[in-house]
Image (cartoon, rainbow, N blue to C red; front, side, top):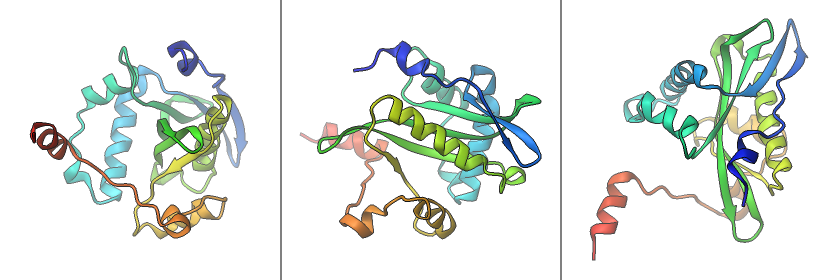
Length: 186
């Protein structure tokens, strides 16, 4: 549907936005950012209390984002005067809904603890949403842990609908072990 070039070179021109005490830049992640993003992912896993479950290696993450066939995309937030330090990131990928068509799934949105409360998360989310619209997307799917009331409230205050409440719709996960067992089961 989309050429690889189109997906990777969307008009994600580094946009500087005045936000409180400094200018924040939202830009497409670059290979040099991979270690910092991975470290923020580890922070997020610890926050979500799933760090023991994290099996994704940094090398695989790099391949998934910057390899020959990327399976997901990443944008980062930096200070305009220091674009080498990542303040937050968002991972997203493409999904398809047979009722509505192409959409974006925002897998992660994370801002480091010391930079929260400055609107960086909202800026990252807005950029993922803008990219989805630019590609003709019909929505942004966001997954929030049931216990994380603050995040759920943050999204719903801005117009997100809880699909469990609104449509009694549950998303189910089929892990690697289950996948392997399923394809072997004849």
